[in-house]
Length: 276
Image 1 (cartoon, rainbow, N blue to C red):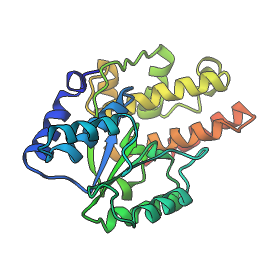
Image 2: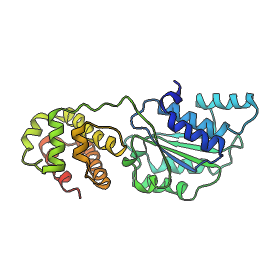
Image 3: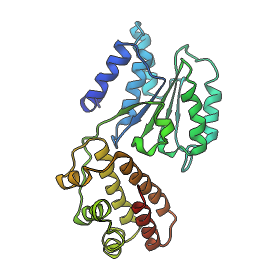
Image 4: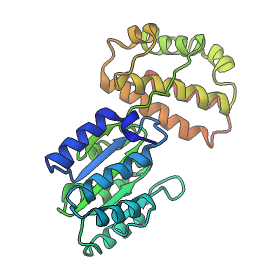
């Protein structure tokens, strides 16, 4: 797939800063927004970083092919081990990157699903971010920046990808839920209505929570929403919407092991209404 056809604005920015102006940040946070081909974008970006200054076309081709085929020795990909990215994974990364580059080039690490950094692993990666070495570059990947610990985000250059395939289909109950949350505060009064129509069981609850969460994400990212939703959110402060997202994300995690859907839903309502 041609990355430029879907991410033209971001690609032009990177071409100018990295290729033309030779300015490379020590850490990037890539916000995928559900863009399915984000790994192709990551590889495109790594090739810009590692190959832009190589004049020998044969050497450039070899390096680019190695990157595409995941055979480049100075790139390390980290994925969650179970539900979280663990501190031990990052300590191993730190140990590996204490050595010199095998190819006398930059060392690059890619942390996937960065929203799964817990407090311990986030504190470990902060060492890389707070005391950056010239030859080490981090690429931290997440579906949305607001799911990642603030101290990590603030130390990265944020790059937000565009996903033109996202469509929000809201039924009347989801819209009413948002209205009751933001305007009238009647979530508890309409508890039974939502329990019977939106949160019948875990599958429905998760699906509808993700719709509500997506509305907030899209609004924060400046994506056009239905007019009724735009008006609803117009006067809401960013911090408050971010806190709504945090409550919903925490509630989705609780949903995995909570046996009583009614108690779970009441807990969700109380936490949403307590957002300041």
